[in-house]
Image (cartoon, helix red, strand yellow):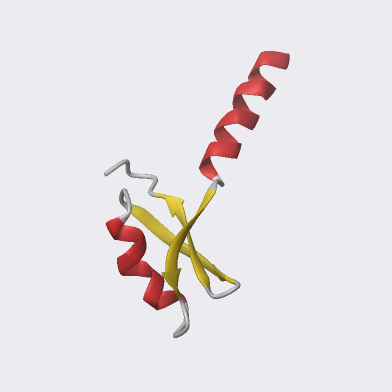
Amino acid sequence: MKSMWVIFLCVFAVATAQIRINAPCDGGIKRCIPACREKRCLLAHKCINGQCTCTANSDGC
């Protein structure tokens, strides 16, 4: 049972990981979409301190 929790937590941590990229998001999160797609097929997530953050795409493209 303990190993199931460890596996769950590892999968959850990877699934929620955010990657900050060097792209400005002055016009909002929509400016991050092309920049995130360029970088290893990522999805736009948030704009933090004027920089885009992306999350890994779940379909594994």
